[in-house]
Image (tube, rainbow, N blue to C red; front, side, top):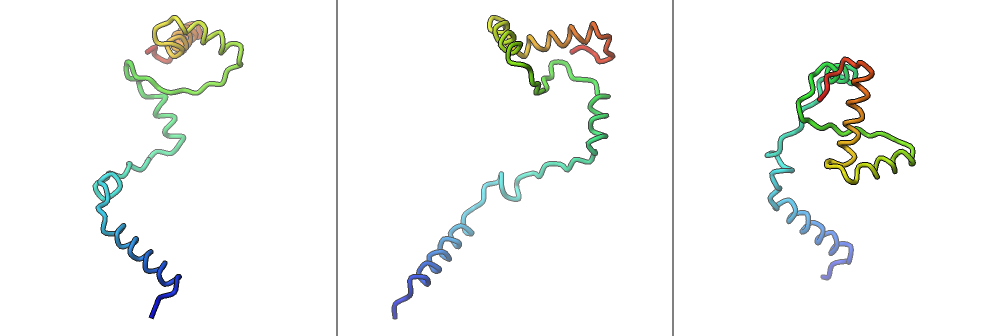
Amino acid sequence: MSMKKTDLEKRLAKKIEGRLKARVMPQRFGTGSVAPAKQEESVGDKSRSVAAAAPAAGRLVTVSVRLPAVPTQRLRALAVGREGGISTLVAEAVDQWLATAGSPVAKS
C-alpha cells in the first residue's frame, strides 16, 4: 500500500527532527555557555553609581550626540589631519569646556 503525499512529508519532517536532535549543540549555545549576570541595580541606582565611580584612566565610553549639519562638517574637516580623528578632537573640546565650567568631574 502506497503512502499519501502528506504522510510522506510528515515522515520526512520526523527524519529531519531526529537528525537535528542528534546533532551536538555548540558550547556557546548549550549548557557550557555562561548566562549573563542579572542586573541587580535599578536604573536610578545605576546612574548614581556610575556618576560616583572614578573613571579609569584611558577608558573610552561611547556617547551619541546629535549635532547640526554645518558644525559636524566643520568638525570632520578639522579632524582629518589630527591623530585620533573626531573622537580626540571632541574629547579635547569637552575637557576644555569642563575646565572653564568649573565642573567637579575629574579630567581623564
